[in-house]
Image (cartoon, rainbow, N blue to C red):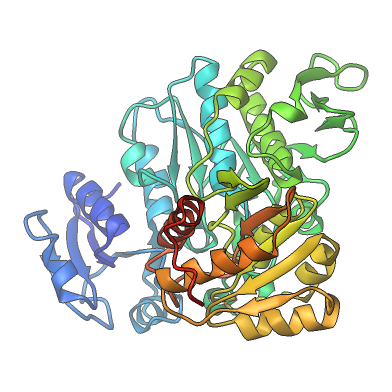
Length: 464
């Protein structure tokens, strides 16, 4: 498929390296470009020609493979499109390469604004509990372009809107859009374009799964499901035939049993699902829908959920001190994710702020206002959140801390601790990205955990 073709790889990061390796091993003539000459030099020795800073494809280029972070407006990608050269991403490349394998893995694909990583982790655990040689990959851990060549039976693939934007023939066995809310508008331009990228995950799927409680998820399934695809829904309520859902405190499958019209399979009690919270019950139902589509039995679904270990910085309890629980959900990097995190607790001192990336926060604040004991704000868009709080929660105490990395987080935790009462949760759920103050969301979460532990041991600086 790629032998003898002239392929330009745009971007020399993790996905770029994977693309170069896969293409050169399959006989392609590869050129790589990147604006960072130092990073480009790290690919020396992989058999590709390295040219920094290209703004147009070299003559004779047959295909451009772009890293997902590159925007469609990048001059190089615009030039390629103008010249009629196909532009694809690493996921599309992986899918096409996998079609040449004698026994390719089955893809079970997950996207959405929030919950992707938790869902693919749950799905991987369910598959493995069912005896399937499976791996969670894609926008998490091992790039899917590496995973397709490792001999797995099934891949639980997390896909971002960036990756889906550059995919056209991707055809997973089953796919789900978990939810959709404003995010990455700085990349896509509009919510409609963002949604369109997400919807393409369904375009060639055999089983299309949707969240019946999320209007966008339903709309995208309706718009993109191919004729003849099986439709499966899930909801945080009594499931209809063809759906998974909740009956009292049990997760129930009425989609894959012997007679969905008249019977249901009990999967697991809601209390056993970790992390807690309604949004994670939805994630568990979505993962179960995909696992059952592959043929995993109900008992293995339950076993997989019991054995699942949530990832770092995703609703992780750091500790409980003086009757107050401290929870690190630094991965809640947009308002939709923060809402799910806040709604999992009855009384919260909320630590928030960062880069909102153009997303609005009024709906979030209005929904959670009754749960807020107090709010501590930091970061570039703290004034935006403060204004929303003034409109929708004027009686809630709000404290703003100055920028300053770990020092600011120490102050935020000290203030939050003073605001909290026994039974409360001090929750880091920023609703924004972290790069205005931290290296990434993990650094932000680590700073929170360190500050909490310092406070608990009395080593934090109380001089404010």
